[in-house]
Length: 270
Image (cartoon, rainbow, N blue to C red; front, side, top):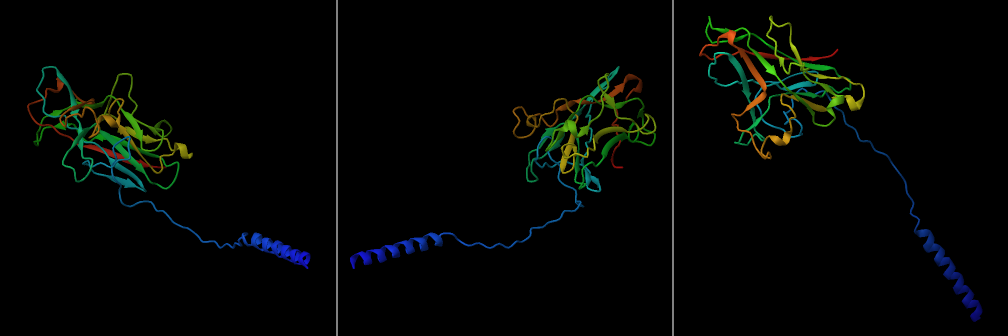
């Protein structure tokens, strides 16, 4: 009897172990759901960023856009007040000023720059920014004196993009061996000057789509040289030696305030 009882008990033990073993294999069943979104070409123009960063800045200037390609910034050129010279001269432009936040009371100097955001929703978008001076520098009277031969010169530039290697993306102003290029005056110098152009690659690595590109009129521009984190912060009245107004002595400038307008034209396509 004891042997039979032990057999039965052993049998129970075997059955129980099998039951425990099969209970650890959970059953599963699946259903599927969807995630979805859509994007549109923006109608609102975005913020200007500090060239070479993703950081928004506050800086004066008009903006425009065509089909999602946005001309975010173009510079004013203020050459300041200068003493007359017998032989004319070269006069450097005062840096642009910007704030790092809208709530800031502190402004910082930064070299002059042009900036374009490409949100056209497609690779291979061709765009270009050109500049032309609308008229000669002129004193503010109806018969005001004009500086007929004076021109704004760009001596150096640096290309930046907030996400990609610029060499595959952009072309900047082509500066000849003379060391500078002059901004042409409308009707006098043969047409506008290309300043910033996309290479319009169909490959993602060479496309500007979804990025912000800048040309900074400064040799070897580095973003860390300007703003609150810079070691030697330029003063707001310091001058950018890579943007000059050349006034030859034959223009015989008077002791007056001269001004002109510049037109920055964004072209998209074809």
